[in-house]
Image (tube, rainbow, N blue to C red):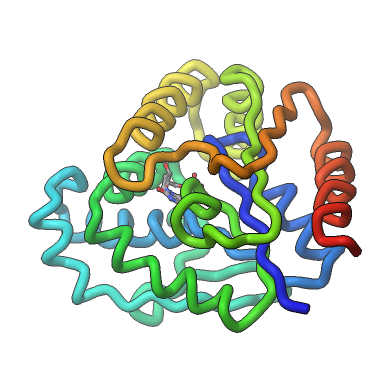
Length: 223
Ligand code: DC
């Protein structure tokens, strides 16, 4: 049986950590869709283009060829053949990704890439509009969230562990701004699907959260 699991929610809610753990337990593919928006943002930055300018950004799309690959089970995005790796993981790229993701043409451009993977494989996909737009028929939909402070703390630790210099205050400020952009945009706003299970994991360890959601997924799928 092939099936789809959608995990949406704001940044720092632990979507990717949980999705990776569930994908490993279930033996299915994990797709991090934020990486696709980050890669478009990266190209726009490289072209020194304003990421809020829909006309200019849309004009760049035909120059972009995106491919997804898997290395040792980890997703890699290729931009015109170049592996993105951690280049798309900086705070600057988070802001670029959020800005370009509000442009309808960018979302349309990435729609097929996302849907075509889910057509060929059982997947667990994380993002902002997976349950509402990309995979509206997903068998399991989860909207993962946590308090602002808890999410900022996680993001801060993640960034400093990668050697990126920042402060908790600036991470919190950027996160609140980015979440508001993502939630209030006109196209595919980052909101829970009506049939999603909303799960708040404030103060929970990643293993505890993954275990609780694994039970939920098994129950929903009848495994
Ligand atoms: O999940 P992330 O932080 O890597 O995502 C980066 C940005 O991309 C996020 O601010 C909003 C956008 N995004 C989106 O609009 N839809 C998705 N399915 C995934 C990400």
